[in-house]
Image (cartoon, one colour):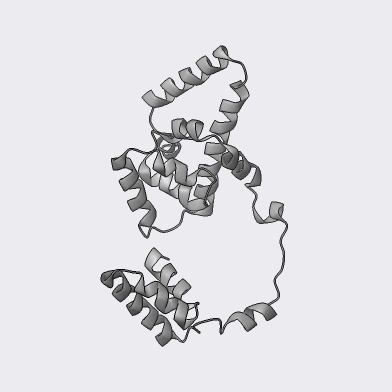
Length: 190
């Protein structure tokens, strides 16, 4: 679902006064595009406002333990806790589309800081890639991407804490990875 449709669905779920207030804050072109999409939702019979809340309140929600719901929980925790500078070093040479897929997975604690630290051209490319309506990754590809990043972060942590020698090992790895192809290309050729 692209950003326009998400915004329209969100607005459609608001009360009429709130929806009108938000629409008035937009530019004429944005308002027109959203109103067209809102009209489509009305035509499809999607209830507006909080009309659907009673149905949701009565719905039976089955809770799934986190470890069952996400087999990558340890990898996700590793990526969540990663330092911004180390993350930037690791994914610096990866294509913008791959980085955008990683950022699309969830809103990471370092998400906005990573985007803000990019040079203007790369930031623009990254934002364009994030806003594009690409299909989501296949689950196995997403798992491989997150696992590979977590493994590289773990690899870095295993040598950290050793002072100058650890920093030297990390610098050598970075130099080697900078001269090699990006990780996704090596995986693709297997």
